[in-house]
Length: 132
Image 1: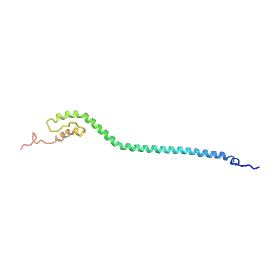
Image 2 (image 1 turned 30 degrees about the vertical axis):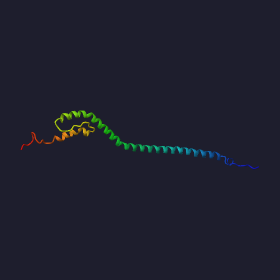
Image 3 (image 1 turned 90 degrees about the vertical axis):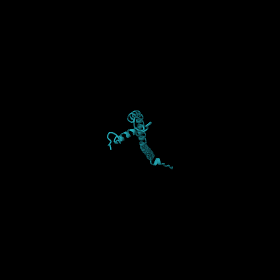
Image 4 (image 1 turned 90 degrees about the horizontal axis):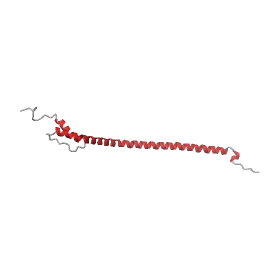
């Protein structure tokens, strides 16, 4: 009588060892895949954060310029009527051209700069002029 031997008969624990080995490999592979997935997601999140920071940095100057220009327009719009009254009172007899529709602070205050510059000039004829 001839008996056929199979691997399980000869090594009774071989079958359970194979199962344990497969479970261990699969478990390690699964946990390794979880670790790899976590690392990839972290890397992608870091790349997105760096890209967003670079985009914001490039826009900061533009946003600041737009905000300053908008604030300047608001100030000119608010101050123009008041300054027009002041200029008409102070510059009534001069040849200074009053700003009709100022859009910038420089245009709005240009007559005022003219007034302050002309304060230090000595008159050519007047009370303090030397007579010859």
